[in-house]
Image (cartoon, rainbow, N blue to C red):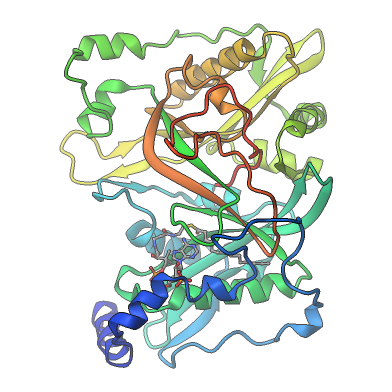
Length: 432
Ligand code: MYA
Protein backbone atom coordinates (compact mmCIF):
# COMPACT_ATOMS: atom_id res chain seq x y z
CA UNK A 1 0.00 0.00 0.00
CA UNK A 2 1.44 3.40 -0.90
CA UNK A 3 1.74 6.02 1.82
CA UNK A 4 -0.75 8.17 0.00
CA UNK A 5 -3.31 5.41 -0.10
CA UNK A 6 -2.82 4.41 3.52
CA UNK A 7 -3.36 7.97 4.70
CA UNK A 8 -6.52 8.22 2.62
CA UNK A 9 -7.78 4.95 4.10
CA UNK A 10 -7.11 6.19 7.60
CA UNK A 11 -8.95 9.36 6.81
CA UNK A 12 -11.99 7.50 5.61
CA UNK A 13 -11.89 5.40 8.71
CA UNK A 14 -11.46 8.38 11.01
CA UNK A 15 -14.26 10.23 9.27
CA UNK A 16 -16.75 7.48 10.11
CA UNK A 17 -16.07 7.65 13.81
CA UNK A 18 -15.69 11.39 14.01
CA UNK A 19 -18.56 12.99 12.21
CA UNK A 20 -19.34 16.00 14.32
CA UNK A 21 -22.69 17.53 15.02
CA UNK A 22 -23.00 21.28 14.59
CA UNK A 23 -23.28 21.61 18.36
CA UNK A 24 -20.08 19.62 18.88
CA UNK A 25 -18.33 21.77 16.33
CA UNK A 26 -19.41 24.88 18.16
CA UNK A 27 -18.13 23.48 21.44
CA UNK A 28 -14.75 22.89 19.87
CA UNK A 29 -14.69 26.48 18.77
CA UNK A 30 -15.16 27.24 22.43
CA UNK A 31 -11.77 25.68 23.15
CA UNK A 32 -12.82 22.36 24.54
CA UNK A 33 -9.20 21.36 24.88
CA UNK A 34 -7.62 24.60 26.00
CA UNK A 35 -10.29 25.18 28.61
CA UNK A 36 -9.14 21.96 30.26
CA UNK A 37 -5.53 23.11 30.43
CA UNK A 38 -3.70 25.17 33.09
CA UNK A 39 -3.87 28.44 31.17
CA UNK A 40 -5.78 31.62 32.06
CA UNK A 41 -9.34 31.84 30.69
CA UNK A 42 -9.88 34.29 27.83
CA UNK A 43 -11.91 36.70 29.92
CA UNK A 44 -10.05 36.19 33.19
CA UNK A 45 -8.81 39.26 35.00
CA UNK A 46 -5.49 38.40 36.59
CA UNK A 47 -5.25 39.37 40.24
CA UNK A 48 -2.12 37.52 41.20
CA UNK A 49 0.83 36.08 39.28
CA UNK A 50 1.85 32.45 39.76
CA UNK A 51 1.44 28.81 38.68
CA UNK A 52 -2.08 27.61 37.85
CA UNK A 53 -1.90 23.87 38.57
CA UNK A 54 -1.36 22.56 42.06
CA UNK A 55 2.22 21.37 42.55
CA UNK A 56 3.11 17.87 41.32
CA UNK A 57 6.25 15.76 41.10
CA UNK A 58 7.49 13.70 38.14
CA UNK A 59 6.37 10.58 40.03
CA UNK A 60 2.75 11.80 39.73
CA UNK A 61 3.07 11.81 35.93
CA UNK A 62 2.27 8.65 33.91
CA UNK A 63 5.28 6.75 32.56
CA UNK A 64 3.53 5.78 29.34
CA UNK A 65 2.42 8.02 26.47
CA UNK A 66 -1.24 8.66 25.82
CA UNK A 67 -2.86 6.02 23.64
CA UNK A 68 -3.24 6.76 19.94
CA UNK A 69 -5.65 5.19 17.46
CA UNK A 70 -4.37 1.66 16.70
CA UNK A 71 -3.16 2.68 13.23
CA UNK A 72 -0.66 5.18 14.67
CA UNK A 73 2.34 4.93 16.96
CA UNK A 74 4.52 7.32 18.92
CA UNK A 75 8.03 7.73 17.60
CA UNK A 76 10.71 9.91 19.12
CA UNK A 77 12.46 11.62 16.21
CA UNK A 78 16.22 11.16 16.52
CA UNK A 79 17.53 14.50 15.34
CA UNK A 80 21.09 13.14 15.27
CA UNK A 81 20.03 10.81 12.49
CA UNK A 82 20.11 12.61 9.13
CA UNK A 83 17.48 10.30 7.67
CA UNK A 84 15.01 11.18 10.42
CA UNK A 85 15.90 14.86 10.05
CA UNK A 86 14.96 14.49 6.38
CA UNK A 87 11.62 12.99 7.36
CA UNK A 88 11.01 15.92 9.67
CA UNK A 89 12.01 18.29 6.89
CA UNK A 90 9.54 16.61 4.50
CA UNK A 91 6.70 16.77 7.03
CA UNK A 92 7.31 20.44 7.76
CA UNK A 93 7.99 21.36 4.15
CA UNK A 94 4.67 19.95 3.01
CA UNK A 95 2.57 20.78 6.02
CA UNK A 96 3.99 23.54 8.21
CA UNK A 97 2.94 27.18 8.32
CA UNK A 98 2.14 28.77 4.96
CA UNK A 99 0.86 32.21 4.21
CA UNK A 100 -2.88 32.32 3.52
CA UNK A 101 -2.65 32.06 -0.27
CA UNK A 102 0.06 29.38 -0.08
CA UNK A 103 2.74 31.35 -1.96
CA UNK A 104 5.56 30.96 0.56
CA UNK A 105 6.81 28.16 2.76
CA UNK A 106 9.62 28.01 5.33
CA UNK A 107 12.69 26.38 3.85
CA UNK A 108 14.31 24.58 6.77
CA UNK A 109 17.79 23.11 6.47
CA UNK A 110 19.62 20.51 8.54
CA UNK A 111 21.80 23.32 9.89
CA UNK A 112 18.73 25.24 10.96
CA UNK A 113 17.31 22.22 12.80
CA UNK A 114 20.64 21.57 14.50
CA UNK A 115 20.73 25.12 15.73
CA UNK A 116 17.07 25.30 16.72
CA UNK A 117 16.74 21.84 18.25
CA UNK A 118 20.10 21.25 19.90
CA UNK A 119 20.71 24.02 22.42
CA UNK A 120 22.64 22.98 25.54
CA UNK A 121 20.45 20.76 27.71
CA UNK A 122 18.27 19.51 24.83
CA UNK A 123 16.50 16.23 25.57
CA UNK A 124 16.19 13.42 23.04
CA UNK A 125 12.68 12.54 24.14
CA UNK A 126 11.38 16.07 23.61
CA UNK A 127 11.02 15.48 19.86
CA UNK A 128 7.75 13.59 19.74
CA UNK A 129 6.54 12.24 16.43
CA UNK A 130 3.55 10.18 15.35
CA UNK A 131 3.92 7.62 12.57
CA UNK A 132 1.50 5.49 10.59
CA UNK A 133 2.18 2.02 12.03
CA UNK A 134 2.06 0.19 8.71
CA UNK A 135 4.14 2.52 6.52
CA UNK A 136 6.16 4.23 9.31
CA UNK A 137 5.45 7.53 7.64
CA UNK A 138 5.87 10.52 9.96
CA UNK A 139 2.55 12.36 10.06
CA UNK A 140 2.82 14.61 13.11
CA UNK A 141 5.46 16.23 15.29
CA UNK A 142 5.96 18.51 18.28
CA UNK A 143 9.23 19.73 19.81
CA UNK A 144 10.33 21.19 23.13
CA UNK A 145 13.69 22.75 24.03
CA UNK A 146 14.84 23.98 27.45
CA UNK A 147 14.59 27.65 28.30
CA UNK A 148 15.02 29.61 31.50
CA UNK A 149 12.20 32.10 31.77
CA UNK A 150 12.60 35.23 33.87
CA UNK A 151 9.77 37.53 34.90
CA UNK A 152 11.45 40.79 35.79
CA UNK A 153 8.66 42.54 37.72
CA UNK A 154 8.34 39.73 40.24
CA UNK A 155 12.01 38.75 39.91
CA UNK A 156 10.91 35.17 39.32
CA UNK A 157 13.11 32.73 37.36
CA UNK A 158 11.85 29.32 36.28
CA UNK A 159 13.04 26.39 34.23
CA UNK A 160 10.73 25.98 31.29
CA UNK A 161 10.32 24.46 27.88
CA UNK A 162 9.87 26.27 24.61
CA UNK A 163 7.35 24.37 22.48
CA UNK A 164 7.56 24.69 18.72
CA UNK A 165 7.18 22.93 15.35
CA UNK A 166 3.75 21.50 16.15
CA UNK A 167 2.70 20.05 12.83
CA UNK A 168 0.07 17.59 11.62
CA UNK A 169 -0.15 16.26 8.09
CA UNK A 170 -2.70 18.27 6.11
CA UNK A 171 -4.87 15.22 5.54
CA UNK A 172 -5.14 14.50 9.24
CA UNK A 173 -6.26 17.91 10.36
CA UNK A 174 -9.30 18.71 12.51
CA UNK A 175 -9.25 15.25 14.08
CA UNK A 176 -8.24 16.45 17.56
CA UNK A 177 -4.74 15.05 17.21
CA UNK A 178 -3.12 18.37 18.24
CA UNK A 179 -4.40 18.08 21.85
CA UNK A 180 -2.92 14.57 22.03
CA UNK A 181 0.49 15.87 20.86
CA UNK A 182 0.34 18.75 23.30
CA UNK A 183 -0.59 16.47 26.21
CA UNK A 184 2.22 14.10 25.28
CA UNK A 185 4.88 16.82 25.13
CA UNK A 186 3.50 18.11 28.45
CA UNK A 187 3.96 14.63 29.93
CA UNK A 188 7.52 14.37 28.62
CA UNK A 189 8.42 17.83 29.92
CA UNK A 190 6.75 17.23 33.31
CA UNK A 191 8.73 14.00 33.65
CA UNK A 192 11.82 16.24 33.76
CA UNK A 193 10.31 18.21 36.64
CA UNK A 194 9.49 21.18 34.42
CA UNK A 195 6.00 22.67 34.73
CA UNK A 196 6.01 25.86 32.66
CA UNK A 197 6.32 26.37 28.91
CA UNK A 198 6.56 29.24 26.46
CA UNK A 199 5.04 29.08 22.99
CA UNK A 200 3.85 31.42 20.29
CA UNK A 201 1.37 31.13 17.48
CA UNK A 202 -0.80 32.96 15.03
CA UNK A 203 -3.89 31.25 16.50
CA UNK A 204 -5.70 33.08 19.29
CA UNK A 205 -6.05 30.60 22.15
CA UNK A 206 -6.66 31.02 25.88
CA UNK A 207 -4.83 33.31 26.64
CA UNK A 208 -2.06 35.41 25.08
CA UNK A 209 0.19 37.24 27.50
CA UNK A 210 0.86 39.66 24.67
CA UNK A 211 0.20 40.02 20.96
CA UNK A 212 2.85 41.41 18.65
CA UNK A 213 2.61 42.38 15.00
CA UNK A 214 5.02 41.34 12.26
CA UNK A 215 7.11 44.07 10.67
CA UNK A 216 8.94 43.84 7.37
CA UNK A 217 11.81 45.88 5.95
CA UNK A 218 12.38 45.28 2.23
CA UNK A 219 16.06 44.87 1.34
CA UNK A 220 15.54 43.82 -2.27
CA UNK A 221 12.34 45.56 -3.25
CA UNK A 222 12.24 44.50 -6.97
CA UNK A 223 12.42 40.82 -6.01
CA UNK A 224 9.80 41.21 -3.29
CA UNK A 225 7.61 42.88 -5.88
CA UNK A 226 8.21 40.05 -8.40
CA UNK A 227 7.06 37.41 -5.94
CA UNK A 228 4.01 39.38 -4.81
CA UNK A 229 5.30 40.13 -1.30
CA UNK A 230 5.49 43.90 -1.82
CA UNK A 231 3.01 45.92 -3.82
CA UNK A 232 3.59 49.09 -5.79
CA UNK A 233 1.50 51.89 -4.26
CA UNK A 234 -0.60 53.72 -6.89
CA UNK A 235 1.20 57.02 -6.35
CA UNK A 236 4.75 55.55 -6.56
CA UNK A 237 7.06 54.33 -9.31
CA UNK A 238 9.30 51.27 -9.09
CA UNK A 239 12.34 53.54 -9.22
CA UNK A 240 11.06 55.59 -6.31
CA UNK A 241 10.47 52.43 -4.25
CA UNK A 242 13.99 51.20 -4.98
CA UNK A 243 15.44 54.58 -4.02
CA UNK A 244 13.34 54.67 -0.83
CA UNK A 245 14.67 51.31 0.35
CA UNK A 246 18.28 51.79 -0.83
CA UNK A 247 20.92 50.96 1.80
CA UNK A 248 24.54 52.01 2.06
CA UNK A 249 27.12 49.42 0.99
CA UNK A 250 29.01 49.63 4.24
CA UNK A 251 27.97 49.65 7.89
CA UNK A 252 28.09 52.91 9.82
CA UNK A 253 28.94 52.22 13.46
CA UNK A 254 32.68 52.45 14.20
CA UNK A 255 33.93 49.30 15.90
CA UNK A 256 31.22 47.03 14.46
CA UNK A 257 32.54 43.53 13.85
CA UNK A 258 31.43 39.91 13.93
CA UNK A 259 31.03 38.46 17.38
CA UNK A 260 33.58 35.80 18.38
CA UNK A 261 33.62 33.23 21.21
CA UNK A 262 35.82 35.63 23.21
CA UNK A 263 32.97 38.18 23.24
CA UNK A 264 30.39 35.82 24.73
CA UNK A 265 30.86 36.72 28.37
CA UNK A 266 30.88 40.53 27.95
CA UNK A 267 28.06 40.51 25.41
CA UNK A 268 25.89 38.43 27.70
CA UNK A 269 26.52 40.89 30.54
CA UNK A 270 25.45 43.71 28.22
CA UNK A 271 22.32 41.80 27.23
CA UNK A 272 21.44 40.99 30.85
CA UNK A 273 21.64 44.65 31.81
CA UNK A 274 19.64 45.69 28.76
CA UNK A 275 16.90 43.06 29.16
CA UNK A 276 15.90 44.47 32.56
CA UNK A 277 13.60 46.85 30.70
CA UNK A 278 11.27 44.02 29.60
CA UNK A 279 8.70 42.05 31.63
CA UNK A 280 9.56 38.58 30.34
CA UNK A 281 13.02 37.55 29.17
CA UNK A 282 15.09 34.47 28.52
CA UNK A 283 17.98 33.96 30.91
CA UNK A 284 21.05 32.43 29.26
CA UNK A 285 24.05 30.62 30.64
CA UNK A 286 27.24 31.55 28.74
CA UNK A 287 27.12 28.16 27.04
CA UNK A 288 23.54 28.72 25.92
CA UNK A 289 24.27 32.23 24.75
CA UNK A 290 27.24 31.00 22.73
CA UNK A 291 25.03 28.39 21.09
CA UNK A 292 22.27 30.86 20.20
CA UNK A 293 24.67 33.51 18.89
CA UNK A 294 27.47 31.50 17.32
CA UNK A 295 26.16 27.94 17.12
CA UNK A 296 25.57 27.65 13.39
CA UNK A 297 27.39 30.18 11.25
CA UNK A 298 25.17 29.69 8.18
CA UNK A 299 21.99 30.29 10.19
CA UNK A 300 22.66 32.87 12.89
CA UNK A 301 24.68 36.07 12.60
CA UNK A 302 25.86 38.07 15.57
CA UNK A 303 27.79 41.35 15.59
CA UNK A 304 29.22 43.46 18.39
CA UNK A 305 30.32 47.07 18.59
CA UNK A 306 33.61 47.40 20.43
CA UNK A 307 34.76 50.78 21.70
CA UNK A 308 38.09 51.07 23.49
CA UNK A 309 38.04 47.40 24.39
CA UNK A 310 34.45 47.47 25.67
CA UNK A 311 31.39 45.90 24.02
CA UNK A 312 28.85 48.72 23.84
CA UNK A 313 26.23 47.20 21.55
CA UNK A 314 25.35 43.99 19.78
CA UNK A 315 22.73 42.59 17.44
CA UNK A 316 21.88 39.19 16.05
CA UNK A 317 19.49 37.75 13.50
CA UNK A 318 18.85 34.37 11.97
CA UNK A 319 18.26 33.41 8.38
CA UNK A 320 15.37 31.19 7.38
CA UNK A 321 14.55 31.43 3.70
CA UNK A 322 11.14 30.92 2.13
CA UNK A 323 10.48 28.65 -0.78
CA UNK A 324 8.47 30.61 -3.33
CA UNK A 325 5.81 28.44 -4.91
CA UNK A 326 4.71 28.79 -8.51
CA UNK A 327 6.68 31.86 -9.49
CA UNK A 328 8.45 31.96 -12.82
CA UNK A 329 11.21 34.33 -11.76
CA UNK A 330 12.25 33.20 -8.28
CA UNK A 331 12.09 30.03 -6.24
CA UNK A 332 13.57 31.30 -2.98
CA UNK A 333 13.33 34.39 -0.85
CA UNK A 334 16.06 35.26 1.64
CA UNK A 335 14.52 36.17 4.99
CA UNK A 336 16.34 37.49 8.07
CA UNK A 337 14.66 37.57 11.50
CA UNK A 338 15.85 39.96 14.17
CA UNK A 339 16.94 38.00 17.26
CA UNK A 340 18.53 39.50 20.38
CA UNK A 341 20.22 42.90 20.58
CA UNK A 342 21.37 45.33 23.25
CA UNK A 343 23.04 48.67 23.70
CA UNK A 344 24.47 50.55 26.66
CA UNK A 345 23.38 53.86 25.11
CA UNK A 346 21.29 56.01 27.38
CA UNK A 347 21.40 59.43 25.79
CA UNK A 348 20.33 59.29 22.18
CA UNK A 349 18.90 55.82 22.74
CA UNK A 350 16.50 55.90 19.79
CA UNK A 351 19.21 57.10 17.37
CA UNK A 352 21.58 54.47 18.62
CA UNK A 353 19.02 51.69 18.09
CA UNK A 354 18.28 53.07 14.63
CA UNK A 355 21.97 53.06 13.68
CA UNK A 356 22.42 49.58 15.11
CA UNK A 357 19.50 48.09 13.23
CA UNK A 358 20.40 49.91 10.02
CA UNK A 359 23.78 48.19 10.24
CA UNK A 360 21.99 44.88 10.81
CA UNK A 361 20.06 45.52 7.59
CA UNK A 362 23.24 46.25 5.64
CA UNK A 363 24.95 43.06 6.83
CA UNK A 364 21.81 40.95 6.24
CA UNK A 365 21.67 42.16 2.66
CA UNK A 366 25.20 40.88 2.16
CA UNK A 367 23.89 37.38 3.10
CA UNK A 368 21.29 37.57 0.35
CA UNK A 369 18.40 38.45 2.63
CA UNK A 370 15.64 40.04 0.56
CA UNK A 371 13.56 41.10 3.53
CA UNK A 372 14.31 41.69 7.21
CA UNK A 373 11.53 40.75 9.63
CA UNK A 374 10.88 41.51 13.23
CA UNK A 375 7.97 41.85 15.62
CA UNK A 376 6.75 44.74 17.71
CA UNK A 377 8.41 43.11 20.74
CA UNK A 378 11.59 44.25 22.59
CA UNK A 379 12.17 47.98 21.98
CA UNK A 380 11.59 47.57 18.26
CA UNK A 381 8.93 50.26 18.11
CA UNK A 382 11.71 52.84 18.60
CA UNK A 383 13.40 52.07 15.29
CA UNK A 384 10.67 50.69 13.03
CA UNK A 385 9.81 53.99 11.39
CA UNK A 386 13.30 55.43 10.92
CA UNK A 387 14.56 52.06 9.66
CA UNK A 388 11.65 51.89 7.15
CA UNK A 389 9.88 48.81 8.41
CA UNK A 390 6.23 48.42 7.49
CA UNK A 391 3.49 46.54 9.36
CA UNK A 392 2.57 43.15 7.97
CA UNK A 393 -0.79 41.40 8.17
CA UNK A 394 0.46 38.81 10.62
CA UNK A 395 0.24 38.82 14.41
CA UNK A 396 2.06 36.59 16.84
CA UNK A 397 0.58 35.68 20.21
CA UNK A 398 2.87 34.84 23.11
CA UNK A 399 1.71 32.22 25.62
CA UNK A 400 2.91 30.91 28.95
CA UNK A 401 1.68 27.46 30.07
CA UNK A 402 0.73 26.92 33.71
CA UNK A 403 1.54 30.42 34.87
CA UNK A 404 -0.62 33.51 35.29
CA UNK A 405 1.02 36.83 34.57
CA UNK A 406 -0.37 40.29 34.25
CA UNK A 407 -0.93 41.14 30.56
CA UNK A 408 2.10 42.59 28.81
CA UNK A 409 2.50 45.24 26.16
CA UNK A 410 3.06 43.73 22.70
CA UNK A 411 4.13 46.98 21.03
CA UNK A 412 0.80 47.63 19.32
CA UNK A 413 -2.29 49.61 20.23
CA UNK A 414 -4.84 47.06 21.52
CA UNK A 415 -7.72 48.61 19.55
CA UNK A 416 -6.20 49.82 16.29
CA UNK A 417 -3.41 47.19 16.17
CA UNK A 418 -1.06 49.92 14.93
CA UNK A 419 2.52 50.13 16.16
CA UNK A 420 2.73 51.93 19.51
CA UNK A 421 5.75 54.05 18.58
CA UNK A 422 8.59 54.63 21.05
CA UNK A 423 6.98 52.46 23.72
CA UNK A 424 8.82 49.66 25.46
CA UNK A 425 7.06 46.33 24.95
CA UNK A 426 7.01 43.83 27.77
CA UNK A 427 8.35 41.05 25.59
CA UNK A 428 12.09 40.46 25.69
CA UNK A 429 12.10 36.78 24.74
CA UNK A 430 12.34 35.70 21.11
CA UNK A 431 11.04 32.34 19.98
CA UNK A 432 11.94 30.87 16.58
S1 MYA B 1 2.89 27.23 16.50
C1 MYA B 1 2.87 26.49 14.90
C2 MYA B 1 1.67 25.65 14.72
N1 MYA B 1 1.75 24.89 13.50
C3 MYA B 1 1.19 25.23 12.35
O1 MYA B 1 0.52 26.23 12.23
C4 MYA B 1 1.46 24.28 11.18
C5 MYA B 1 0.27 24.06 10.31
N2 MYA B 1 -0.88 23.60 11.09
C6 MYA B 1 -0.99 22.34 11.62
O2 MYA B 1 -0.14 21.49 11.48
C7 MYA B 1 -2.27 22.07 12.41
O3 MYA B 1 -3.28 22.96 12.01
C8 MYA B 1 -2.06 22.18 13.95
C9 MYA B 1 -3.41 22.00 14.65
C10 MYA B 1 -1.12 21.09 14.42
C11 MYA B 1 -1.52 23.55 14.36
N3 MYA B 1 -1.15 25.88 19.22
O4 MYA B 1 -5.88 18.43 15.95
P1 MYA B 1 -6.86 19.53 15.93
C12 MYA B 1 -5.79 23.71 19.09
C13 MYA B 1 -1.88 25.33 20.21
O5 MYA B 1 -8.24 19.13 15.50
P2 MYA B 1 -5.48 20.70 13.70
C14 MYA B 1 3.69 26.05 17.47
O6 MYA B 1 4.29 25.14 17.00
C15 MYA B 1 -7.15 24.25 18.71
O7 MYA B 1 -7.37 25.52 19.31
N4 MYA B 1 -3.09 24.79 20.02
O8 MYA B 1 -6.37 20.76 15.05
C16 MYA B 1 3.56 26.20 18.97
C17 MYA B 1 -8.06 23.16 19.22
O9 MYA B 1 -8.18 23.24 20.64
P3 MYA B 1 -9.48 23.96 21.27
C18 MYA B 1 -3.58 24.79 18.77
O10 MYA B 1 -5.75 21.94 12.96
C19 MYA B 1 2.72 25.07 19.50
C20 MYA B 1 -7.26 21.91 18.92
O11 MYA B 1 -5.88 22.32 18.80
C21 MYA B 1 -2.88 25.33 17.71
O12 MYA B 1 -5.65 19.41 13.02
C22 MYA B 1 2.37 25.23 20.93
C23 MYA B 1 -7.70 21.31 17.61
O13 MYA B 1 -6.92 20.18 17.37
C24 MYA B 1 -1.63 25.91 17.97
N5 MYA B 1 -0.89 26.46 17.01
O14 MYA B 1 -3.99 20.79 14.25
C25 MYA B 1 1.49 24.11 21.44
N6 MYA B 1 -3.61 25.18 16.58
O15 MYA B 1 -10.67 23.15 20.87
C26 MYA B 1 1.06 24.31 22.87
C27 MYA B 1 -4.74 24.56 16.96
O16 MYA B 1 -9.26 23.97 22.74
C28 MYA B 1 2.15 23.95 23.84
N7 MYA B 1 -4.73 24.33 18.27
O17 MYA B 1 -9.54 25.34 20.69
C29 MYA B 1 1.66 24.05 25.27
C30 MYA B 1 2.77 23.73 26.29
C31 MYA B 1 2.99 22.22 26.38
C32 MYA B 1 4.21 21.86 27.26
C33 MYA B 1 3.94 22.16 28.71
C34 MYA B 1 5.15 21.74 29.59
C35 MYA B 1 5.02 22.23 30.94
